[in-house]
Each structure stands twice: as C-alpha cells, then as structure tokens.
View 1: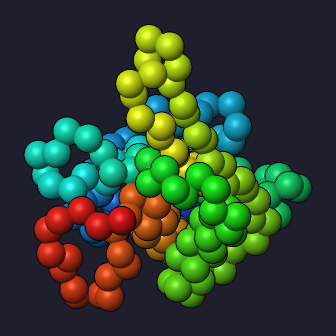
View 2 (view 1 turned 180 degrees about the horizontal axis):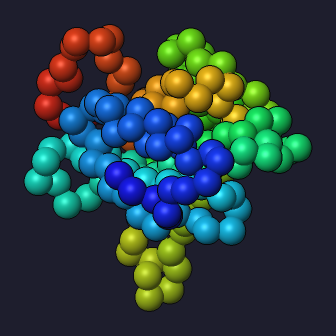
Length: 195
C-alpha cells in the first residue's frame, strides 16, 4: 500500500499508519484496492476503494465505497487533530425503503455503532446519509425504480496506533449497507445474499 512520497516530519507516523492499514483483515466479501489519493488536502494521504461481492466471481457489487486517510501534522482546526478519515459507502436497496422515515438515522447509526463497537476514540465526526430514488419514463419506462443509499462521513481518529481499526469499522459499515449481517469474530457467513 503506497501513497505519495513519504518524507518529512510526519512521515514516520504516517508510515506506521500505512503498516497498520496493511495489517487489517477484512471480511472475505470485501475486495479492497488502492487508488490515487487526493494531493491537495493534506501532506500525507492514502485512498482505498472497496466492493462488497457476494462471491469471489460476482460481477455486480452489493456495495461500493471509498476510504481516504489524511494526515496533516499541523492539525487543521476543523479536524481537531492530525488525522482525518473521509469515507463513502453506497448500495442499492429495496424500493420500499425509499419512504422509510428513519433510513437516514439507521444509516448514520451503522457508522457510529461500527466505530463504537471497536472501542475507537474519534472526534469531529460529520456526514450525510442520502437516499436516491430513480424512476424511468418514456423509452426507459420498462426499467424498475431503484433506490440507492449513500453514507458520506468523516471523522478524526484520536489514536494513531489504531488507524487500521478505523478501516475495519468502515468495512463493517460497507457490509451493513450491502445487506451482510454483522458477524462475531471468528464466525464465517454462509453463502447467499441477505437483505
């Protein structure tokens, strides 16, 4: 897992965070790929995309997302610290979910529960939960309506020694939005899509 050139005052801490990210073991349904990181937001950054796949050979993802870790030793005021996790998760939902009045609250609770469930310290959390309903007309009228949910969130990890656990918590959110139930440690899910 690489990022931009790692040199300077914060490089040792960032290099340790990269090693921690590399050590994370996510659920086997998650395919993680490193992508180019943003270059103007912070001196140090790494970006990952992920797809949640029902099987290793599945062509369509149950959920997709992005995890970006930023590090700025100057501790930008809005962050409240030297680190910032910036995340995105998206999945298609059943059409009846479009009108669920608590869908946003549930989506946000998945994030908070994932972070708290791993006993992570974080501050300055912010984000949105969006539902997108697409209906087709005229020449596309035969397409069924679709509903997508997006969770965009950022937060400041407090303990740089546990950066990998923040990635793991985001993986939990990604699986939740994709319809995979949470699993206790050491338990393997039986194959088959659940929603």
